Image (cartoon, rainbow, N blue to C red):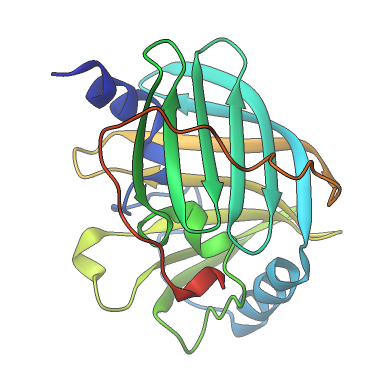
Length: 214
């Protein structure tokens, strides 16, 4: 296995195509349209966010800084790993600083891609919400792509009052779970001109973007 494949296994799962997602709520699947509308309104109202994230996968935790600017731009800087994940609005780049190597995947094939589209439609587009859950302080949506239900799903958790992105959970095709929680999220739009870009060196794979982020 190449070094880049190992990196993608360890750090890329939160951005990899969806797989069956399990949440610690009731097992009776139902969809509350009011919760779907609440999530959609909140997500479409976001311009930019900045804060901290903690990623838990394979029993290990990694933390770092999270930045997002809609449409299409995301950046994760890991505190203790020479890895950067950046979307420039078209593709998502996995940058291994130690190897000076970049691998790209289509942003539309990732969980993050849903959250940073220009127009987020959780009811009548290519996204299907299959379950909603709520407790005293949070609510969650479980969803999958309409044309590819076999690929599985992801779940996004929000604080209820005020509505705020709290976490997402993905389980990949092998059954491995990746949980990402957010903290200290604040509105931010004044990112530097090239903040969501990286200088290309060795590119292992490339793929074009799509119209969801234009």
